[in-house]
Length: 429
Image (tube, rainbow, N blue to C red):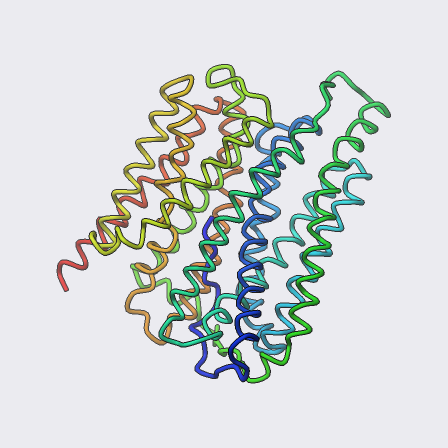
């Protein structure tokens, strides 16, 4: 999932220091993009691990995404209000502190042997990432020449995608590569609980390592707090925000963000189990996790070339092309088997690459002074990543993974319609 632009346009107030200090702060923020991009998408590796250990069906396994991404719906707008009160610096430090605390919660979750404990830790983690994203997007725009603000944000977004790829790649080894050969379904009582605790210890250790890194970065931001003395937070008025949904372009855009994030997360969440199915490649979880990283690598490569493609095509037309490609690839995967089924689904990552920012920008066109509030609505729509994967999992339980891919296909169909509609709107201007 692309990192959302969760706040208003950067305020005009500058930052006092320049030169080497500004560069140091920029590097810290790039590191933040790298971390919260990767940490959030580790859920794709957690799902098959927890599904196996706790003997869950797909619907219950998808509660991992539900717990994590519900935070976007609940905390996006309140986080902006909180920043208005405490400022960028305290917002950044608090965001990192919440994330570090959430990572530490994985330790008692592992030793409790309770699935609900992991869901609680993921919910807290999502809240911390939401607050952090609200702060870092405008801040990276403040740190330097306003004329190059968008290029800095694009550069930071690139590291977000790189973080996703690397975290998934190494997370597959750390979390899935040490799995026991014991089948949890063959155990009961104390033996099952002991097995669950032993297996989830690897998860806890990985997240404790992340907690240490997050705490260190929070400390660095605090040490460099003097840079932010003159950085004023853009104040956003949220009164009457839902009335903006009377504007057709914005309402349709919110629906498409909901559907896009839901489709992207659904595919990533089932990918490891899908690649492990006998109909596809019969891969072990670790090998399937490595292949999952290529799904996100495709998104990274697509974003590198997306900026050039958007110069050659109208955004609505390009969105429709990508949506059609995504739908076709998912359909191909669901109707085929073996390597074709595997690689066509992995290639959907490339089709996804420019969808989020393109939908976001198309939906925000013409909002003018209402753009910050429209941004809040669009980001709240990310909750689709919590709801649609659960629907996909429920269908997979009753009809199988191949049939469950019909839900992402339906999502792409709506996005295609939005792309063509906005293209026609542009023609009439």
